[in-house]
Length: 413
Image 1 (cartoon, rainbow, N blue to C red):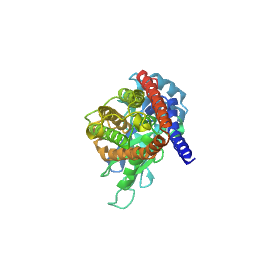
Image 2: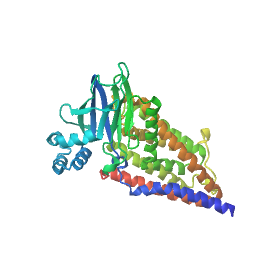
Image 3: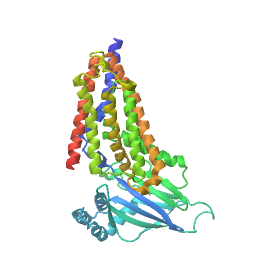
Image 4: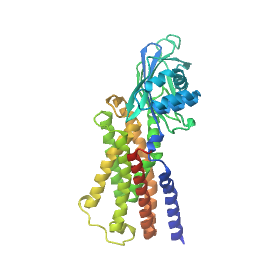
C-alpha cells in the first residue's frame, strides 16, 4: 500500500511539474518574440540636464502610441512604412503622438522633482537582431541649482513602463538602462515588477534586479525550460544531469563573456531556430536511446548497463555532453540577446550580466533538485512506468521543439 502511494505521489508530482511545460506546444514559435527590450542610455551632458537615447521596437511603438493617443492615421501610415527605410517619415509626421506616449511612459526625476522632457534632433531608425528600432533622444531639464544642499549627490530616478503588460501587445518588457549621471555609472534592468531605478540605490539592490531578471527569464521562458526538462528526463544518474547542466552552464557563460566583449554575435533569425532544434535533438536523443535499449538498466535492470569508459562515461555520454555544450553556446547568445549584450559597448553590463547568469543557474539547480529525485523515486518503485513516462515526455518535448523550429525557420512566429 505504501509503495503504491509513493508511486502515485511521485507520478502526480512529475505530471504536475511537466504538464505546464508540455502545454507550451500551444505557445507560438517566437517565444522570445512576445517580449520586448527597450534600450536606454542616460547621461548628463551639462548640469541639471539628463539626456536619454531610447531604442524602441518600431512596430510596437507605432501600435502602442497610436492606441494610447487614439491616432488611427499614425497606425495606418506607420505600418505601411514598416521595413521600408522610410519609417522616420511617419514618426516625424506624428511626432506629437510618439512623444506623448514616450514621455508619459518614460520619466526622469531629480530629488523627487519631475524633469521636463524635450526632443533633441529628429527620429532615426536602426536595427537590432534584424528588428527595426526607432531612436528617440530626449533632454530632461531637471533645473540645475534648484535642489538639495551643495555638494550632495543628486538622486536621479528613471522610471519606464514602455510597452507594459497592460497594453496587451507584449509581456515582460525589459528596459536595459546604461547610465552615467553626475559621476554615478552602471546599468540597471527595469521590468514590470521593478519599473524604476534610483542612482542612490545600493549596489546590491541593482544587482538584485538582474538576479530576479535572470530567474524570471529561465522560469518564464518555455524553450529553456523544455531544454532543461529534456536534460533531466534523458539522464540516467544524478551525475549525468549534473554534468549536462554544468556543461550547459559553462557553454552559455562563455558566450555571455564573448558577446560582452563584442567578439561574437548572431542574428535572432539564426539563434532562435537553433535553440528550438536543440530542444528537439536533446529530447530525441533520449527516445532513441530507449529504442536502442541503452540506459534501460536505470529502469529496473531490463538490460545490462552500457560499458563505461573514462570517468565512468561511455562514448555516447561524451557525445551527449558535447552536443549539450554546443547548444549551450547558442542558448548563451539567446540569453545575451535578451539583455542586448551584442555590441562592444555592452562591456559596462558585465557584472550585471554575471548576476543575471547566477539567477538563471539558481532556478535551474532548484528545478533539478526538485524534479530529479522524484524521477529517481519513480524509477526505483515502478521502473516500467518511469520508462514509459520518460519516453512520452521526451517524445512530447521533441514534437514541441520541431514545431517551434519549423515556425522559426519559416518566420511564422
